[in-house]
Image 1 (cartoon, helix red, strand yellow):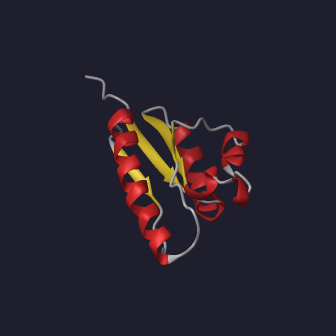
Image 2 (cartoon, rainbow, N blue to C red; image 1 turned 60 degrees about the vertical axis):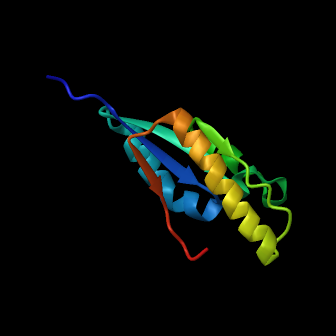
Length: 109
């Protein structure tokens, strides 16, 4: 009996977490029994933060989902709205992607 490939969706929201996650993405992509999915969100999609999504693509990774947070500014109210938007849109994206595992790097924010 052959085991089916496990799909791992890695969520990344900024250059800071991507720097830590890039070696993990490479390791997952190199493993024949694993399938990599990349969910990009947050600063990766914001022109004011350099649209670092392009760095992920330049490293050879496909973007399977983009989740915009619609962050208007950095007030507490705007940040709270962005969190709610991100959770809702991530749920929608994950329902489509249907990964076996979701990997998120935790930080203080």
